[in-house]
Length: 393
Image 1 (cartoon, rainbow, N blue to C red):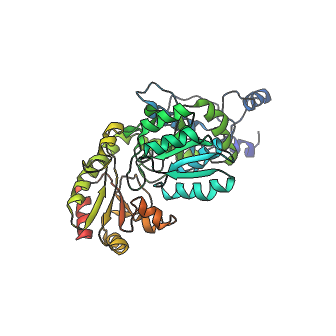
Image 2 (spheres, rainbow, N blue to C red):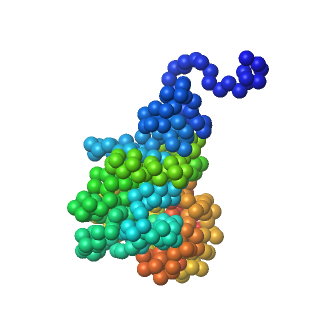
Image 3 (cartoon, rainbow, N blue to C red):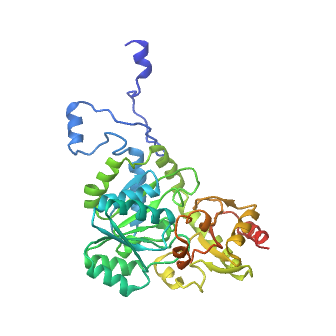
């Protein structure tokens, strides 16, 4: 062997003890022992071929999140990591739907999801209908009579108004009428809410947010108890669209998951204190937090959520200018177009995340010009409140 060949050999022949930390596999492909093994793997035998198809780091993290979503339910799930939360949603819809199918969803969606449905899915012949999921009679009528409805897509809590959907009601209707159901569970994580326990078929996350928790990774995940559809439809879409997650992003996500329970407890405790403070402030018109007994969905939250979470929003008297002035006075908290980090993050939806949504639709769903979204961090609650107070006063 010449010196050049020796330098590029990347597979040393030795065994080691078991690693304590999940190994990172930053490899584009995997070497076969012989052509027969290669043929077998491309014929469906389990194993790793190419990191766009699967990767040991990704698989380990996806499996962990699948088990978290199923913990205590007696169910089993399959999961695939994607390049982002939006990649998870687009892969889910592309894999399950075709031209002529209809998605039944809500108006108060995250702005990016609403734009995906209205600007991309509709171009491919998929019909998108947005209705009020609190109108149970209407929801049941739609699912019973409109056979072209192939997917019900939900956010609960909704971003950023924190409005809830009764998951058990929708899950039961899906089973009754043979309609697939999906939910974005990013705000809650499986530590707070387990939609599979209520009959929902698919769960997506932007793992960028609370699951990772540290703002250093962008990724997403699709999880489902429908192993058949995951293997036959979702994996095919992911593989051919190339929406897979990189192993490094998966590895960072795995590190964040280790503190998930601790973080979600602190996020939730801080958020309740802050919501109670804001609810008493004269500059604040409304507070949207499911932990407040005055919130219209408080009882439903107690039924389907273990905690009330770290997300909330509040509306200021004075509209757009009041919202912009408040944001410019913030000192301790951070203005950022994301959520779920250990730091407290503020966003003004009307001028940022939901600026692509028509104003009449925004306002009909409580996303006013003076609305501020808060992703409450794990700092001391008193420090967060002090910053809000100086900006409000």
